[in-house]
Every structure is written in C-alpha cells, then in structure tokens.
Image (cartoon, rainbow, N blue to C red; front, side):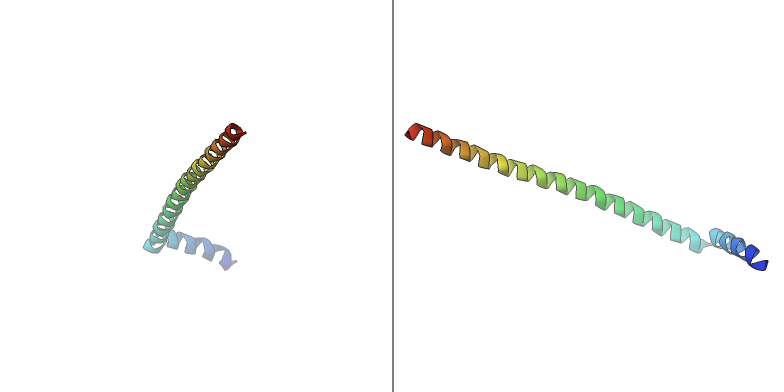
Length: 74
C-alpha cells in the first residue's frame, strides 16, 4: 500500500526541485537545436536540388545545340 503513495510524492518532489526544471530546460534546448538542424537540412536539400536542376537544364540545352548542328549538317 505504501508504494502507491511513494511514487506520486517522488514525482512531486522532483517537479519542485531545480533538477527537474534544469532537465526540462535541457530538453527544450535539445528540441530547439533539433528543429534548427531539421530546418537547415531542408534548406540544403532544396539548394542542392536547384543546383542539380540547373545542371540538367544545361545538359539539355547542350544536347539541343548538338541536334541543331547535326540537322544543319544534313
């Protein structure tokens, strides 16, 4: 029977203690850092895909020029 009362009292004591508050602050800092990293990863992926698209467009334009040269040669 006593164990039912001990657990809530320990939780209440930890909640009021500075240890619990500092642990929650560290958790919030970690969550913030994770969100920042996730946002920057998304930005880099977007930037890389734009660079790849530009490279592919340049290849397509080069192939079009070669096709036009071959057509004029015929």
